[in-house]
Length: 179
Image (tube, rainbow, N blue to C red; front, side, top):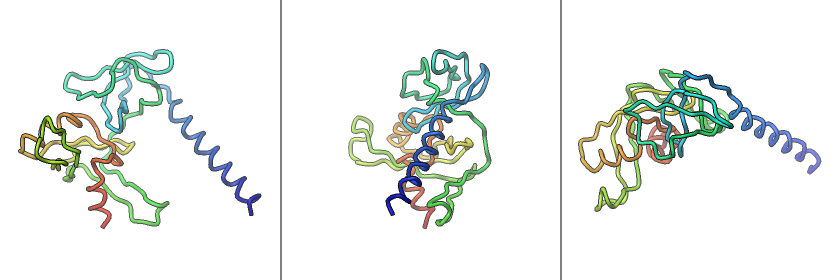
């Protein structure tokens, strides 16, 4: 039994390692549109130049907030950008129904409250609308909430950036859609 499992586990490990290596091997040219990954929050920018093991990225003036230093981005944190109309999250190899997110749909973001911004709540729930979806599963959202505390938390964490559909702030939304 162990002789049978070991080669399978070894091959799965090698395949996953090779996929992880391939993710950082995409070569971008100056002018390519990319997303930079900072804790599952992505900022859209344009490659300015290639540096040692990464890129210098130019971000438009209305980008932000950028919570990671925006000077040089290691190649592992730079992803290609392509806009799509919808994105499906597959679970358990297709045994569960896929969750589909489309441009124009509403979503709920839930963040732990920053006591300096929202002193009386533990969690802040923010209503937003999907304005764009990238092919890697990150969504750009537009704020729909009118509450000042919710607005402040939205602009602190997401703003005009893209947020990964697997981000913990979208857990309640994923749970709601999976029922």
